[in-house]
Structure formats: C-alpha cells, structure tokens
Length: 124
Image 1: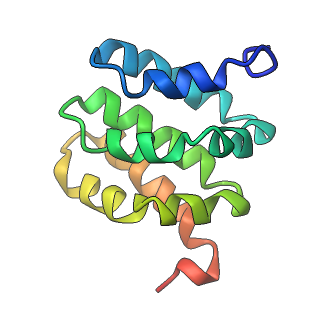
Image 2 (image 1 turned 90 degrees about the horizontal axis):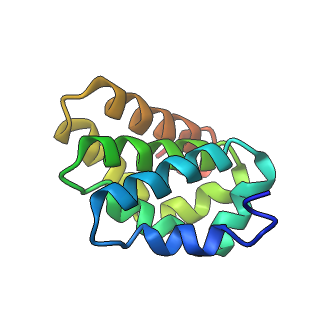
C-alpha cells in the first residue's frame, strides 16, 4: 500500500533529513519494503541507493545498521547489485565492517557484501 500510494519518493527524500530520528524511521520503513522483491527496483528508480550509501557513514549505529540492512535486501536482486557498486556502496560497506563494533551493523554490511559477491563480475 505504501509503495502503491507513492510513498517511496518521500521516504527517499527523508534519508537526507537533518534529523537522525527521521532518517532512522525512513530507513526502517525502506528495509521492510525492500523485503518485497517488486519494491527493490522501484527504490533504485527513485534514486534511493546513493543516500543509503551516504548513511553508512553516519555517526549513528542504528542508522548505519538500517541503511546496511536496506542495501542487504537490495543486493538480493541481481539487477540491483550494479547500482550499489556504481554508487560506491562496496567501499562504504567494507569501511563499515571496521568502523562499527556493533555486531548487528557488521552483520548487515557483511550480508550486503555477500549478496553482491554472488555476481561473478563483482568477485574480484
């Protein structure tokens, strides 16, 4: 219903909010929505990948976990992996593995990298 009603574009816009709590709510919502295969490509079309990659550099562990979780979900889709790579998601995810001591953050970042690595062109 949220996607059908046009909710993706406003949620992507909220990723750039100055309020961390607003960014967190938007990323949690996007994480839930991207568990649905049909919504993954739609989020890419709404230019949602780059702001998510940027949020991996946030000072908030909760926000970094949720952003990595959305990218983890997106990377399930082979057609979306290239967008994550093009938006410099791999270096940001790798950096996040070392930057956070929180296991849940590392789990999501490693999961996203695992999903990206499934494509032979991204193994190297």
